[in-house]
Structure formats: C-alpha cells, structure tokens
Length: 255
Ligand code: ADP
Image: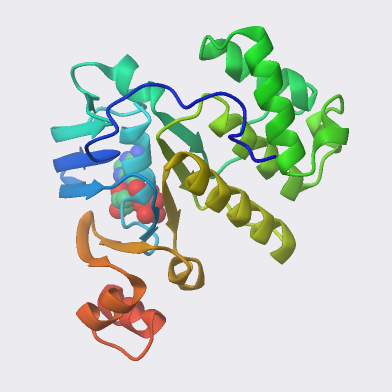
C-alpha cells in the first residue's frame, strides 16, 4: 500500500502546470527576497530548489502557503490563482515545514485527524488515508502514541503523511531532511517518489545540499531571489560551468 492508494485525487486542472509563478516579487523593506521569479512545474516531477542560505527559499514557501502575500506577480496552483481564489489554490498545496509542527502531546492519529478536519475530509475517508499513509511509512504501530515518544525521523514521516492526507497536487518540502539519519532520509524520499508515481503529484524540495538535488528530475538554482539555472542536474552543471553539480553550484553562488 502507498500513501495515496486510498481514494482518487481531488479534482483540479490536470492539463496545465501544477505550479506556475509569474514575475513574483517579495520585498522586506529595500531587500528583494524574491526578485521577479517566473517558473512552471509540470505534474509528476521531483524538483529540487537548490539555493544557499538567504537565497529566498523559505520566503517562496511562505508565499506559496499563503503566510505572506507577494508584492508583485502571480502564483497559480493547478490553475487556481493564489491572489484571486486563495482557498482553491491552497487546497492543492501540501507542506512539510523546516521546523517540526506537530503537537507533541497529542497522538499521531489525533495530529493527523486535526489536519483532516481542517481540510473537511469525511471521517471515514480520513481514517482510511491516515492508516494507509502510516502503514506505507511503517508507522502503523505508532498511531496511538504521543508524538513526543517518536524519533525525529518518525516525526518527519508523520508530517509527510499529514501533508499528503488531502492529496495535494503540489507538495512543498522545506529542507525536510535536516537532522535525519540516512535511513530515515531514504524512507522519506522513497515515499515521495511513490506518491509522484501514484498520483502525478509535483514535489518542490528546498535544499542547500547538492547531493539531494542530484537525485531530482529537475533542479532550480535560486540565488538572491532569482533563478540562475533550471534543468536536469547535468544541464544545470553545464549551464553554470563545473565538473560536478557541487562545483557548479558553489562557483555560481559564492559571490
Ligand atoms: P533561504 O530560505 O533560502 O535561506 P530566506 O527566504 O529565509 O532564504 O531569506 C531571503 C532573504 O530575505 C535573506 O536575505 C534574508 O535575510 C531576508 N529575510 C528573510 N526573512 C526576513 C524577514 N522577516 N525580514 C527581513 N528580511 C528577511
């Protein structure tokens, strides 16, 4: 069973891009954290958003999750405008934030049910999905346990199950492997790949780790709020110039 094996994905425009940004600008005072960012992500791909600290990755995610409003530009999620119909657009977004955001005193199931209720999922369907999701990630024995008792790796897995409960078209992962051991990291990646295969979801994975970007279908290199390169890992390496992606990335972003 995979995370997405229960019930069909929600309706939404499947013909066009999963995510489209058009000349997005976000300022903090004089500083432009996002400086006219445009891009389009197709359904069914794993995209790494690779940028050094301060590149604008978290700011982009804050805009995409509705926490901040962009100063200029447009965002469309599954064809829904974030500016004009935020509720519809946000229905198609799932997110795992950098900081753990589970209630430590509640059980795994209560945490997941809370999220399902926020999204208005019928109780029986929520139960099926959360059980399937936990089973896929080896958490089925932990459903009744308080999150406090879980390891860091398993807490992250619960957050992934939660982010996918409403079957979003676009999954945002903000540096999700920080502090995880190699096995937990591998499990997380495998679960995400399975979801992409099962539902043609699109994953935008923010990282400053080149090795994680090397495993992506597509790499976006963000620096000072602008895209420096966009393509497969090999294409990005060639565009930026270097023998390896790491060399190319460091060379292009160290200034
Ligand atoms: P990243 O997530 O890639 O490390 P951020 O989005 O956090 O980058 O930051 C992008 C830029 O915006 C940086 O120059 C950062 O200092 C600045 N910045 C981020 N958040 C704020 C804020 N709340 N107020 C002022 N400047 C900020």
